[in-house]
View 1 (cartoon, rainbow, N blue to C red):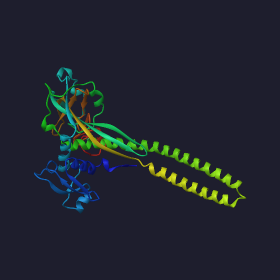
View 2 (tube, helix red, strand yellow; view 1 turned 90 degrees about the vertical axis):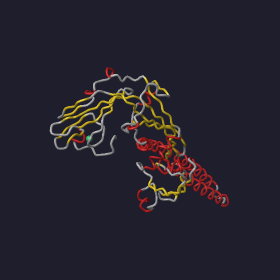
View 3 (tube, rainbow, N blue to C red; view 1 turned 90 degrees about the horizontal axis):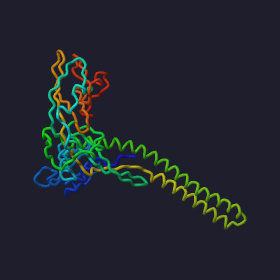
Length: 362
Ligand SMILES: [Zn+2]
C-alpha cells in the first residue's frame, strides 16, 4: 500500500511543465533536468534548469532549484496552473451583513483575567477556494472518483459543510453590488493548495486502510477458491492413479499430470498474491473561488500590566458561524483566551501545556 508519485510535487511539476510545452527528464533520486517555458521560468526566454524535490538532493546538486512548499518557484507554478487551468470565480449574494442582523461578538469569545472590547463590524470581501481533485484507486480493480477540499482563503483552514450549503446559495458570475476581494488579504495560492493537498492525503490514507482490508478479504476468498479447485483436480487424478496401478505407462502419464497441476496451482496462487497491490493517484482538476462578504470586528484584549493585544473576529453570514481567531501563542483557532502575567495571551490548550506550536491556522 502506498501513496504513489502521482500525489507528489514531482508529478505535479512534471505535468505542469509538459502541459506548458516544456520538457522534463528525470535523473533519479528526486532530481530532474527541465526545459522551462517563459511563463514557468519567469525569464524572457526558455531556460534549462535542474530541479530538486528533496532537500538532501538539493545539497548534493548545489545548482539545482529546490521545489518545495513555500518556495517562490512552486508558488509561481501553482498560481500559473490556477490562472490557466479550469478555474472559475462566483459571488454569493443576498447575505445579511447589516449590524442588526448579526449576533453579538461578545457571545463568540471569552477571556479570563482581562477586558475584551469590540469595535463596529465592517463587511469585507472574503474568498473560499474549492479544490476539486480526480482520484484513482488502483488494485485488481480501477476506480475513479472526484473529491473536493474547501479552504478558507483568509485563515488557510479547511472548511466543512460549505459545498452542502452552496447548492442553496444565490450565486452570480459577476460581483454586482458585492464586495471585491481585498488584494492585501489574498494569501499565496501555493499555501492554499498545500492545505488542500494535505487534507486530501489524510483522507486518502484512511480510505486506503479500509480498502486494504476489503482487498485482503477478497484475496483470501480467491486464494481459497483456487486452492480448492486444484485440490479437487489432484484428488481426482490420485484416484485415477490408484485405479491404474497395473498400467505403468498410464501411471507415469498421471504422475506427470499431477506434477503439472501442482505447478499451475503454485503459479496461480502467487499471481493472486502479487496482483493485490493497492495504490492511489490524485490530480487537481479544477478550482473554484467563491467570494462573499464577511463581517470583521476589531477586538482588543486589555489586561493589567500587559501590552494590549489587537486582532479581528470574523462573522460568516453564509455558514452562520464565527471564525475563531488564531491563538497568539500556538496559532490554533480558539474562542477562549487565558491571560497570564508573564506568558501573555494564549488558549486553554497552551495554558495546559498541550498545544504544540505549529503552522498557524491548523
Ligand atoms: Zn494556543
